Image 1 (tube, helix red, strand yellow):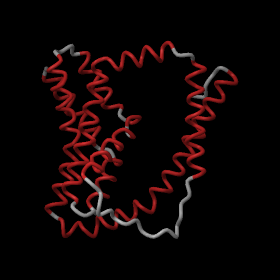
Image 2: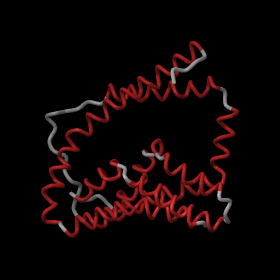
Image 3: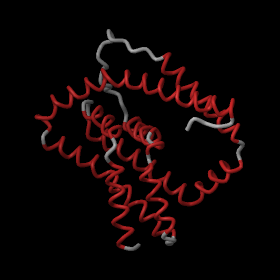
Image 4: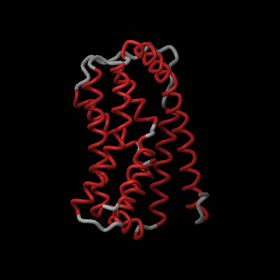
Length: 224
């Protein structure tokens, strides 16, 4: 592994690690009972999922997906996009924001497995914004290294990717008393605004996908 590739992986990993969604879930876990093991389990689930995903892409899944997309009919692809758009739009319209709802209770029975799965779900939800990871994987593939070096490069990327999450946990432990009230207020703000954000993002995203797919199916040319 060359020094240039090493620096590139570290730099891209640091950029990729600044992801608000990852910290939002971690903030919530920090307000629960036994926050440290839950956060560690959450980080482990997310990083493991990210690493396995990178391995699959690097070892051939990327080629399979590329070949399938190349052979698939545009009508089929935009038909699937239309279905996805309608599902997003339907979810956004169906989802109700109840201002009178009481504050969400912090679960006392949230298991470490649940936190682990939460990490996997959050990472899976961020696949569409994982462009830095795809760039890093492409650079690793172009380096034409042995499999062991490829895995080492992916492992390094994921270690760098997880550093801010561990740093945030460390800061919480060092200033636990001072941060307790701040984190609680942040969590309350998240609980208030996140449902609204989810609803309108789903509606906007659904409208965009639906319009784009509909225009293609009617005219043969997509909007985007």
